[in-house]
Image (cartoon, rainbow, N blue to C red; front, side, top):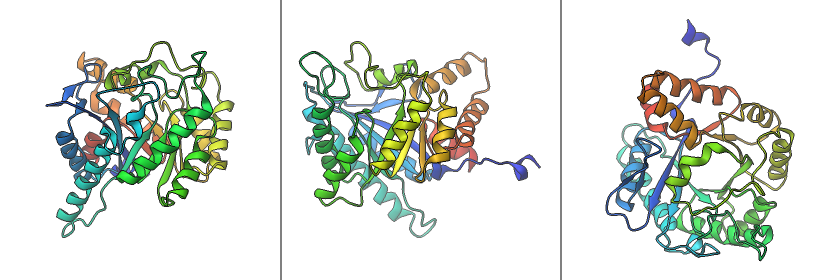
Amino acid sequence: MRRLAAETRLHAADLVLPLFVKEGLDEPAPITSMPGQVQHTEATLRDAVADAARAGLGGVMLFGIPAERDATGTAGDDPDGVLQRGIRIAREAVAAVEAESSGTTGRPGPVVMADTCLDEFTDHGHCGVLAADGTVDNDATLDRYAAMAVAQARAGAEVVAPSGMMDGQVAVIRDALDDAGFDQVSILAYSAKYASAFYGPFREAVDSALQGDRRTYQMDAANAREGLREADLDLAEGADMVMVKPAGTSLDVLRAVADRSDVPVAAYQVSGEYAMIEAAAANGWIDRKGAVLESVTAIRRAGADIVLTYWANEIAEWIK
């Protein structure tokens, strides 16, 4: 009866799995603050994407970790940089699984998404180019995002995801993609992205060089209306999807964005949310499976059409 009357359901096709690929690794490197998650080699990235395809996930979101960084993140738009290589590997892995399943499920593989931000590629760890006074130069950063988005599209990304919270990023990227002939590549805009304590484990995952914080360009967690304004701006600039992040502490904003958006709405269940449940479950304080499913169901209930979660594969298996 509860199943029959359930108002919110989870489906593998609504889930996106974030994946990290690091240049120069000989074997996967465990992320200690995110038990069960790793920095992938290029070979194991292929396997991870294939597993996501077989699980029926809706997408994979790729983050690249280069061997060398500089002030402007030049590795970010290098045609042969680690992220672009990862995108090509992911597309090949998806195509291979689609081919092997064509006579059975005939199900399309996950959409290949790429993080379009400089923080993994800069030696200072910020999401943009720094001005002389040490602040992030918004307009100079937009030029870098445009170059990154085009490089990712050329490598095969089907969705580019600007996550840096620079003003005007969606419009600049849309123009750059269209001018380069990639009008079919979609933009998933990180629209309401709050400066959050729950990003801590992610910084280990990408070997972040950040000193200080990102509060001059990420949003104040106290502000809900500001999040709606940011989403409205991205929608007006042509975003194909908008995102709220972190998911678990922004459910009110997520609901409000979903109520006003005419495009799909995503929410990112971030590294700190993952780490808290894993730590509590490891200590026997909560039921792991129950907590995972409840937390993701709450995000869907609040209005997310798409959920980025590190548990995507497990959830897909549990609900199959």
